[in-house]
Image (tube, rainbow, N blue to C red; front, side):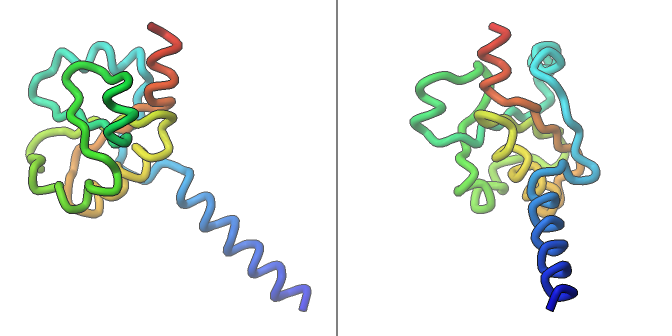
Length: 122
């Protein structure tokens, strides 16, 4: 019985780590680095927060595609251009980044700390 409990706990820990840790091939940048990248008009900037969160405060140049709609709207994005993703804290954008990688996007960047980090530095 103890052996089964240990396996179950290990599987739960692995599942949680897989959801939290950044995926391979996804670039992670700070909000300071993002400030420099906003000038690059060849990149696609996506905010995966809800429309309400986005309308309350957003970074100019970011398009709002809520995480729940992203899988249906990947056709609106170019796989030939880098996608930079942001959310409120970095968790949803990390999940969105993984979704984009699985959908065949090669260059995906997640903004660590999200809008919370952006707002605290403004």
